[in-house]
Amino acid sequence: MLDIRVVPFDDPDAVKLRDEVQQEYVVRYGEPDETPLHPGEFDPPHGLFLVGYLDGDPVATGAWRRPGLAELRPGDIELKRMYVAERARGRRFARALLAELERTAALAGGRRVVLESGVEQPEALGLYRSCGYTGIPNYGHYREDPRSVCLAKELAPPTG
Image (cartoon, rainbow, N blue to C red; front, side, top):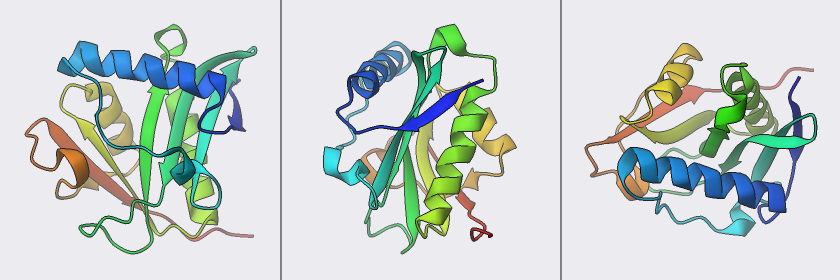
């Protein structure tokens, strides 16, 4: 079972997994993701950074932030750096992490989750679409990149 924890952006496990995902981008796209990220954007209540552990080993990560981009709606929450290490893939950890990101985003008042992925990440696109995400116009740093794919999902208000 994946043990999902809130960690600071600069936590060593978070840094390790962010470095791994950047290497994944280099393999798939020939370069790292250059979207500007600022550590404070992921501090509650403005954002959240999660790391998933398997038997104490950090194997998954994902985060959300309030993007504040003109082309997005008020109440949008943006997912960033969703990643499962190759050694832990195929165990539904990405799905569990995504559900936790959506749950915490809704609790923080988010009304819609948005994300930017790309055509070289078919596994990620399949996950998002199977979880109810649909296409939206490209936005942000890669809005003009033909390899960019942007998706969104309306969030249900939290219950209880």
